[in-house]
Length: 108
Image (cartoon, rainbow, N blue to C red):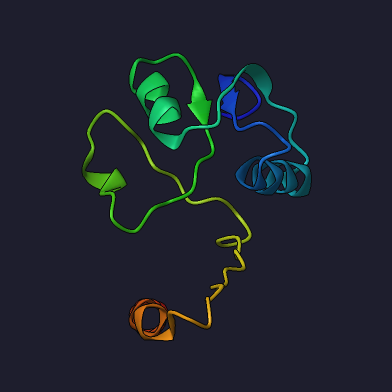
């Protein structure tokens, strides 16, 4: 599908776009690129309107598989990993401690 359908991509210089580009290279695919968009919501709306196909992050809070206007497929090689971190201001450790704890719970 990536070789034959119009492809809506993230800009390669964005972190998500770089991950998509890395995936396409690993798959040895050069899609028929028609648009560069840096918004998951905008890309999904364009895909729903049959403008093209895309590779987007699979957000946990979005029910992609229950949306009948989309077909969500897994990419080969498994999910890409993303490094995240938290910066804290030492004057507000009580506030960031709550955020840090919640983040650790979600990631566990």
